[in-house]
Length: 492
Image (cartoon, rainbow, N blue to C red):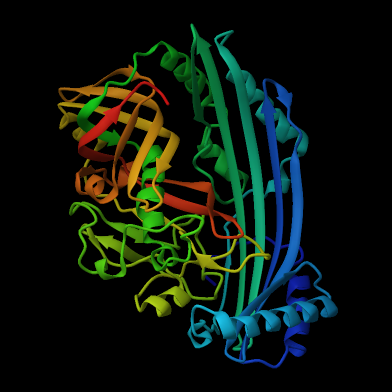
């Protein structure tokens, strides 16, 4: 077992195992099959301007049947988990496999097989149900009220959410992969308006979702962070615009999350490199021949795929194809080593990848996705990096992003900036932004914070695939210093 807890088994876990046994006993004749069962619940709560918003609550349970037969691969999903419903789905998968045998882009023999037997469960110290609905709404009401610093704050919000996913993957080769993932996320937002200028500041853990239970709230600052968030929203309205020009850029982990996500994570997705995502999410400037030799960044750039970080969003025992997940370098000392490709894409491209075939739910097949993509710390203190800057801007928390369909040229803006002059932090500036080209930008990396500056963050809305799939992705990073970057102000 990869991660264990003392909590009781997930509700419905025994039911999923019984369904899997019945399917295995009556499985269709074929070269290979898998059954992936997913049981999911979620709840979202919010208070806006001291009024509770309509809550979102839901549950979903279904299965994806995959067959390899007669030279083809086929999928079919169903919410009917009766023997008849799964048999019908298997029949649909067989029909799709026959179509793939005639028209498919790859040989069905390349499709990965798994016999993995493992389990994973998020460590939860304080279960979601341990706090009553009234107490949760009371907490959010208190947090929202603390954002009220007077008439200059024109909108306030606090939110809290939970998601629990239990997934069971079995195969004709004897696989039995049982994984239960629990997530809690929270956040604050305050919008200020002064003399025609409007600025929004967020906090309270809004970009720090992770695996775990309500114990995560202790570090989120849902109450303690409120005054800072509102105060900074007001201060940004009164701050001067960010200067424009070539200068140094110091990105805090809150913005490094998006920088890593867009200009390292997405370009390294192997199905994108192979052209599978061309029609929807675009291609990549990365080509197969770059791996092993291409200088993606300076020698300070070390990026890992790491599914073993406790509490990070995409930690797991194995991916949704049943490939065991382990920590590996994607970029080492600035040199590109591996793509983000699951086993099927690896075989198609003849490149070593990682265990990153992921599906957003029971009604989607696994595709190449980011998981936990982390920028490894170095040894420098944040204060030392600031001291090395003669003229630059420190930027905090992403506000908007734009990147071309090759994941190469980008333009990002942040919520908050601070001038750095002669090695010292100066005043706030509003509407800070910067632009660059991915590899050129990463080659300008001249400072990476130490382990004490590392922050584990993530995003809950990474979209890709047709039909679309939105998944959770973890990113950890220290603050990073970049030299001679095109910085701009003036808003968007």
